[in-house]
Amino acid sequence: MSTISRIIFRTFSTTAATKSPAAPSMYEDLYKERNLKTVVEKFKKFSENPAFRKQANVYGNTVRRLASAKKFKWVEEILEDQKQYHDISKEGFAVRLISLYGKSGMFDHASKVFDEMPERKCPQTVKSFNALLGACVNAKKFDKIDGFFKELPQKISVKPDIVSYNTAIKAFCEMGSFEMADKVFGEIEKNGLEADLITFNTLLIGLYGNGRFLDGEKYWGKLMDSTSVSPDVRSYNAKLVGLVAEKKLTEAVEEFGKLGPKKIKPDEFTYNAIINGFCNNGDLKEAKKWYAKLVQSDNTTNKATFAALIRLASKMGDLEWAVELFKQSVEQKCLVDPYVLQLVIDGLIKESKTEEAKKLVEIGNSNKFRRYNLAMPAEE
Image (cartoon, rainbow, N blue to C red; front, side, top):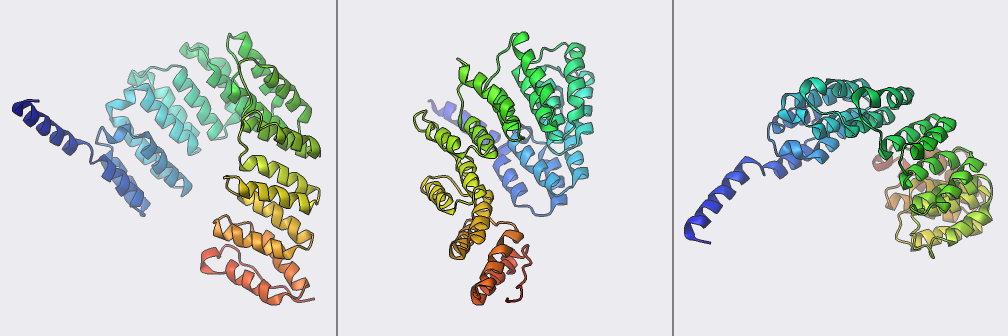
């Protein structure tokens, strides 16, 4: 590179760095800011930078913070502010706003962004159609899905794709309208599409998880017969939940055994399904064995695991293990509900282990875990 070329390159690089990659510091500034009103003001200011407006994750994280704090007016403030920029004429940017409004439970705002797209000369393709369906699901406006699915494609001249069908199926499963979900599934092939793994998993999770075991088995059979789709760990987790609910624990363990040969790695939900089965059966020995397997795997132990095991250990009188499990849950910052810990405390009092019970109450009522608000029962 010649001297003059190097000078031009350095000048261009310096100018570009000055104009936009203040970006990382902007994101860090937003992340560290604790005052949400200030977050809103900074976000609007930073949005003037085109590089900042490309950062979908920053938008998602900020909106999630505001929505979690129930500051929906501020969600509206920062998202409506985005409409002043030319990016709003791009479908991808409009889709982002639709999705963020949907995830915040603000469906009317999401729908408005979609309806305004033509006047902003922004194309409406299957991508924005799917975003609107997704907003319905995220905002739990399930009743709107059927009408949108039937009327909108013709109105805006788009052909639903497999994402559209999967979103509709998810909505009907969430509603408990499994007959409608089944009907939508039947339309997939009729319209020249092919069900994918998301289609099957959505149906399996919905059916097995809601006591529709035979219907779940029907789709399990379709999945196993498919030449283009293979089950993954989520498919097996749904199947295990169904088997455990039907008290078919032996079959559940057999299904678990198929994962290794299929090179499917169990996750914490896989282990939880089996552990819950043995807890429901009151089989402490097997529950302990499967908990040991979970610990030996590189999966995390979640709140549901600890809660089920502590309840069983307390019920079966193994209070030493129940206390140990609680301590592990504290170490892993995975706190069980207060009533679960109260079971352990009550059990310790019954066995006259007052000092141990007091220690648990102190832990639960410490500043760190003030949510517990535990009490010492009277000794019997």
